[in-house]
Image (cartoon, rainbow, N blue to C red):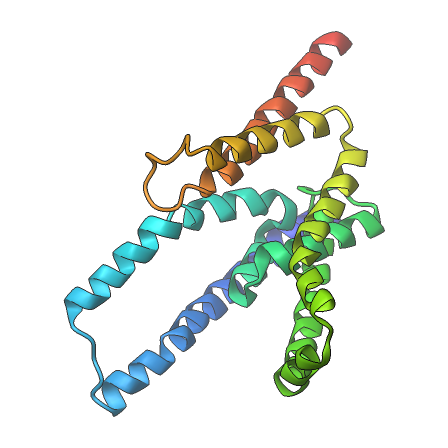
Length: 232
């Protein structure tokens, strides 16, 4: 049996089965505190309040429930998608860890090898994340209090710097597409700040992600078709 057969016939079914089980378990655990309050202590908000809260959240971030899986799947694959959405911190921890792992291993995103390597990278990031959080819970507050104000303010630039580094990493791999991807994201960001998308429901920041992802995909497809025509 070839590696590809093992991946598709043994690895993926195993991952999907346990991904579903652990995903459902994570949902139950997420509602655990609310269930305990409702069943054990009789604390239950009115249905109208729950509906209002859901509608408020859905109008603000509901679009991301559909955009994020589509946007991240080409990088992290099936196993990575289950792991990322169960563990959280997708954009600021899991995706960078997956991208760096793929780059270090020399594999392409969207391939079977890339999916496996990204899963390993994210698995390590989850373990490190738990360790750092455990330390942070006990020592984080005291550490931040003793840091100078300039150092605390500098932490606000950590995430933008991380995403900038990731963009450069992929830009070096796709030099033709990178300028277009940057131009699309910049144009959409400027339009968002100018209020062009204010007519959209909720907080329309999702349009930047949506437009950047699918706009860059369209550019990549057009380059691919053009190169294919030249070769033929």
